Every structure is written in C-alpha cells, then in structure tokens.
Amino acid sequence: MVSQKKQRNEKRFFLSLFIIVLILFAVSSLYNNQKFNSKSADNTTGETVKIQPTKAPTLTENQQSASSESEQVDPLSVLSGIIYRHLIAYNLVCTEANMPLKKYPEYFSKKYSSEIQTINIAWARRGKSLESVLTDYDSLIYPKTQEDIKKELLSLERDYIKATKAKDAGTTPDKIEWTEEKENKLNLTDACMVFDEAAEGMVEKTGFENMFRELMNGL
Picture 1 (tube, rainbow, N blue to C red):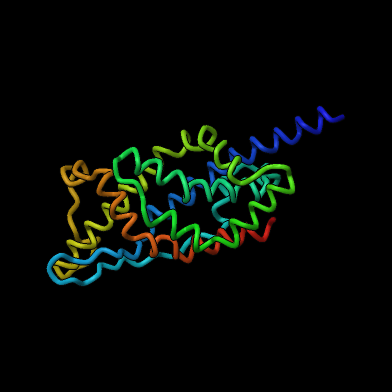
Picture 2: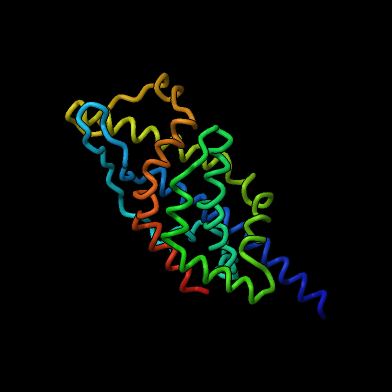
C-alpha cells in the first residue's frame, strides 16, 4: 500500500516537472514577444528607452498547450519551477556568460517575498524545504530550459537595440531593419547586462504577476 502510494506520488511529481517545463517555455515565449521597460539611458540625451509590454496570455491559455493530464499537476511544484527560473536559472546562464546578475534575483525575491515564504511553508508541510527542491531542479529543470533562456535573453537584447535605434531615428522599432549580421553580433554578456539593468521592469510585468498570483490561488 505504501509502495503504491509512493509510486503515485513519484508519477505525479515527474508529471509536474514535465508541465513545469511546458509552462516555463510558455512564459519565456511571453517574454520574447513582450516589450520591456528598459532602465538604461541613452548615451547622448539621457532619456530612457521604454518598450511597452503587450497583453499577456492568461494562465489558462498558457496551459492549453500542456497535456490533458495537466489538471493533475501540483501547483506547488509549478510555482517552485517558476521561482527556480527567476531566482537561479537566469543567473546560472548569465554567470556562464561572465555577467552574473546583481539586481534581478534580489528584486524578484523582494517582490514575491510573501509568496516565496508561503511556498516554503507548503513544502515544509510535506517534509521538504523550498531550498532543497530548488537544488533538485538544477539537474531536473535547468538542462531543459538553459537554451530557451539564452534565446530569451538574446531576444530582449535585440528588442532593446531596435528600440534605441528607433528612438534615435524618430521612428518605431518595427521600422528598424534587422540583418543577419546584426543578429550574429548579439551576445549573452550584453544581453545579461541589459536584462539586469531592466530588472524592475521585467519583474513588474503585469502578465507574469497575474499568472504567478493565479497559481498561488491553487495552493
């Protein structure tokens, strides 16, 4: 009886991990398509380049791409996966690019300190800690999301460059010609720097906050 219960729990846990990855890909797709509020100033005018966010999909829309079994997914595991991505995974990618994040993880942890504490308490009721779960995700989630995060960060750098050029030219980003040569010049070091400078704007994205809080209601 105990063995069957353990097997069911393990099956549910790994199903949760699978859905976590799907949701994280959906969230990163949102980031790739959204525009973010950059904190970096123009070198000549001192004006801030602002990139406005588009309407974010709801949690329900994000989960439609998951399997029908997603209804069985443990919200606690999904929330922990999102926290892992924002507090750890981004920084792992940027540290490997020799540009560790200084602002983003701190800002995220402050913004969602209450939620993180609630999630940690929820894990404690199961005999675990959020810290130990996040450590496990280093091998369970990071290998599956590493390349996706790199693409996301490079996309943000591209958007920033186009927005800056558009402001200088008095036009809109969609009017800026983007060549293969420019694409090849994108690099993770610069992308991480832009991402960290835009930390507040990234964390404050309405679409992400709504999704995160929506998941919290499922605990």
